[in-house]
Length: 330
Picture 1: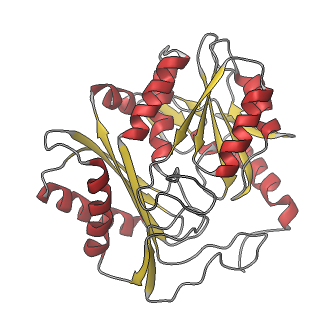
Picture 2 (picture 1 turned 90 degrees about the vertical axis):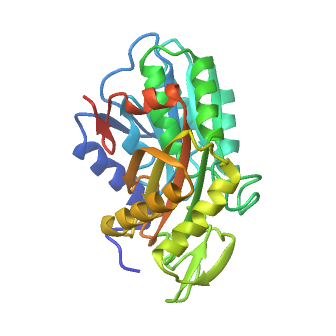
Picture 3 (picture 1 turned 180 degrees about the horizontal axis):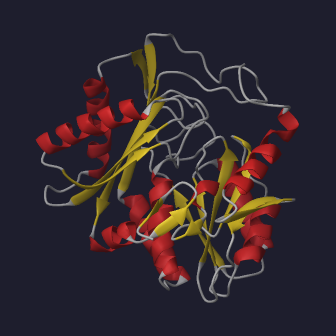
């Protein structure tokens, strides 16, 4: 295992400390219990958004704390759910009187611990569970579809509504609409290595790919030989389109996400392939996002997310955002 690491026990603490120093103009890092919050206090009367999950998916979620997105994020150990006391402490820190909305990916550990954290917190709160992965209905650590890259889109769009005075109920409703109208599928060429494990999460041949892989290395739909990019992208889009069934006059956001080990040159090639295929099927792409936003440590691979957009979703997607990992319009 070749990684920049001192020792496993201090890995997360040292990474969070470095993250806090690198972006001290935007965020603060609390270490006991661990959570990331905005540098500037959440304004009075604003719904506070909190997300989180296991580390190893950076910049999700700490990289999305800031104006127009999250108010706080709770990082667990690598690929491990954060603990309820982290959610409680984060909620107490950022609640500004309008309530707290927890954004949770559909994994059993995350669901259980966020529910416990919400019950421990005495203030008004609610939650959204994301489950955009169309690859499999049930997988390791989940009942139903996994929550993956569309969680980033939920955080951005709901973050805009919260920033502009939306109520807790309105924010939850919009988040559920975004989640319902999004579909994601990923493919992996290599495994990743969790530092504490010291070896790859799964074995895969040099000429193989895992089609429909999960962001923790969970098995997908099938193991196949590596194919041309356009063939891979076509198969991914076929699964997403079968699920979403977008209308020809609908506007869509196309999100090509890197898993951590794939160069941007390849991600833009995937985006080009996806645009050509969608155009040939009469599917309109009006918004885009390309880059590493929901990763799986150093895994080589990518995911594609398609989000069906109405005017409300488009307005909040385009609104200003300023975080460590996503910023525009400021």
